[in-house]
Image (cartoon, rainbow, N blue to C red; front, side):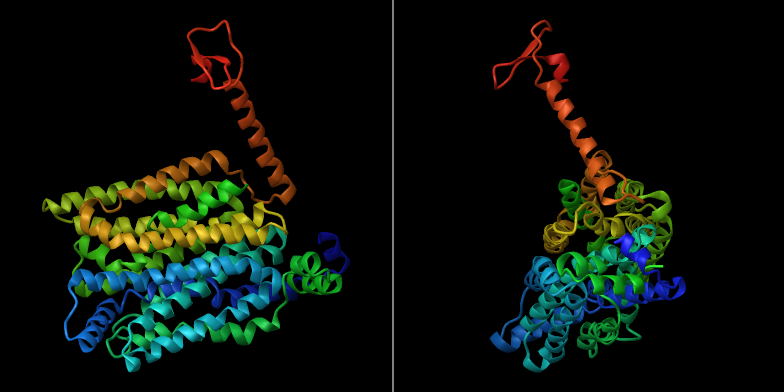
Length: 480
């Protein structure tokens, strides 16, 4: 691809502008939607719960208990994650069959049908339509969260690969922030307007639908999957002037609990002692924090590297989780100022997430796997991500009610394990070709095999000995 690029050198300014516009067009209807749809569901929580209860009373003549309403609400929230899982499973076949760009365009159909459902659910007096709408919106996010980073990773030049791929995280954070702003009571966060708030995700989809067709397809897809050398050369001219590790990183990104803050911001800030009337404004600060961190990380990724941002992010999140738990405990004993410390810890937790895990995780499959394996890798990684998000979305309200001040301790365990595991297994991929990254994994595998061979060695002279399953006698000292 690089040889073909130099055979047809583009004008740097035009190619750079085309690449930037391609990124914006793909992301505004892609990972932006993921962040936007995570955050807009928080503002109308009480209105939708009231609609659920009113609908049930009208049908059956009796109201639901609070736990029953909460259960239906968690189904609405978690339907997004189930849809994301389905979308992740669809993303691989779609990317191969339709291509990266066309898949993103077709993906908007899920979004438009979902918007139609929420706009008519009150007329139909059906809260089940909201569940279905959130499922479809989740499918849209599941497809885009896999295909968009693939599209970016295959389209960007090597020296910009990390920054371009990390822009997915920037648009996710921007979507979260804008969704929180649109959900203010001064805008669409009121009882009469909540269906329009949930349906507002159709507007970014329309923007993508009208802009993305003007930009090129992934050059690697055109050359390798379709065998169209001429189209590949044209696309290049316009655009350019480890399996366990990926699965662990994808699961950890959701199990760390960051997205539960957006799903259930009201629960968390009420637990932290923030007055209810102030919560909607405090919530905007969470989106602003991740947006700021993702922009900063986008500037740092090619200097600091992927591994340090990822491991450092989880390490910082572990620290802030401990401080947050201590602050909640002291707050329950009446210590002054603790609600503000708790709120600061939430912001710091989100900042740490945005600095590393939010963006680096999506880059890894594009940098570690070759062209043939990449769609399947994104499909597996995306499936694990959405399963993890579903579990967190379903369980978090009950974790808060049962653990109280210690509700973030499960996430502490996830962050600690993730930091250690990724620190030991993930090689640095900054500025490296796929061959160099593969060689680095090979070296790590060789080191692992050498350690295993030491454990399997024959040692008749050392004492005491440990019997093994294959009747070898191995020194206990060597094993330790």
